[in-house]
Length: 244
Length: 244
Image 1: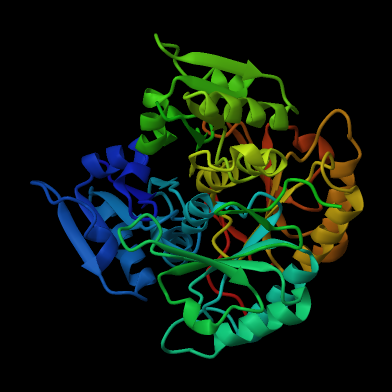
Image 2 (image 1 turned 45 degrees about the horizontal axis):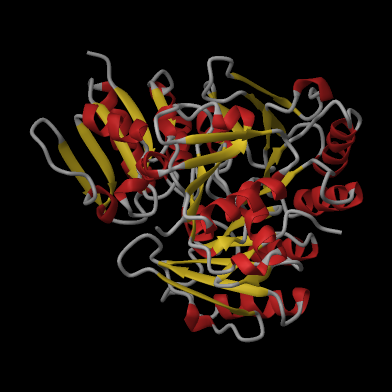
């Protein structure tokens, strides 16, 4: 029996946003591996072993998947959103690089609806013009790099999406992010805090940078920052397609 | 009868990447509006009127949808990929702003798998670190803005995804794009040309910036540019999660 690994995106939390391709992979799997809350979204069934693990053990999780697949298992590694955006796909390829004996493993990456696009859809079309996606966590890169990227992105007049904007272990950084954006973009640019999108706790708040406070974000929030042309129409926020 | 508009993303071309939410909206629709090749992906049925239109008539298409919904129709505007990424969602909100009599229209945006994430999944995980998405067409913005964004994005060491990299009407601009990237990033950064992803004609090519030529892209290609850490492992390309 030949094993494989699929790194699959479950989307933001609403089962109606899980693609049929991901559903099929889960139906064929013998093992599902991932962070506890994502594995909890997979229904148990006979012949399927669930392997929920804690946060921040991405490389261990990836190596475990490679070992299982080498033994013939059909393994789905689940991420929320899209596995290629600040999620398990890069971690798996890092593990393959560190353990080249697994280089022949059959691996597929199955895309999902990533958090920023679900959030943007709920808000209107705030990513309708050129944009960037930045992970504000400094677990895996120096904070100075984040600050530099924020400034350059603002100077490029990108719309922006922030993942992991704020955590208990680094409460001051999101305040610093807002300061940098105000310095570079001024107080009038719109910013949307999209919390728990497509779950029963969904909450969307749009304010100006001048009105924004650090407490408006937590780790379940995706933050969407406008470019200089971003505007409201009715209850929606959108970036026009054109710029001058 | 109360009409509505759903702006829905059909994903890159594989029906197994169409979300159940989008499928439901299509099943409930009385009218489907969109660019000819995307409307062609919707199966005809009794009670459903298909309105295929040519390219570059986005605002006419959006106004038509608003008029139909005001008359009670259940309208799905279809985009390929995700409707919020260089597609119909922003055009619809522009039309609402220009025609405020439609401000009360019930509008929902239904996300889809956008081309860059399907392309990234097919290639490995090249967008696994901070990244930006740039539409290289200068139909709706000055080319000078594109050049400026490219330079700032390279200086920020973003991975990059380019939509609409090349067309017959502007054959020189993608060559200029490659020149700018080589100036800012050097010749060794990896670049992936992902053509017709998730269709029978799918073709993936990864080379260095030094090896890349303008002819490697056409309008069916999404281009993914690495950051300074992007590397290959086996047949895959990925951006590591960490950076220093």
